[in-house]
Image (cartoon, rainbow, N blue to C red; front, side, top):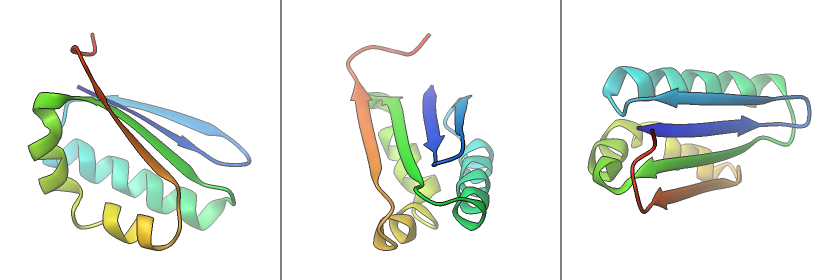
Length: 83
């Protein structure tokens, strides 16, 4: 399970989902849209440790580019499952 918060100067979007290619693609679309529409974007992600390999695999197309643009990204690995 994953909890992401896309925060900007104008709003905060909370995104709860299972870690899969489809849901992480959707998260990436929300992040890209927020980058175009608002200033001060920040991304905070909480996930279970077991989800890290799938998360890395399915975000490698957009998350590193977001970080390279200077967007603050905070990833927190939780000691127990989100539920």
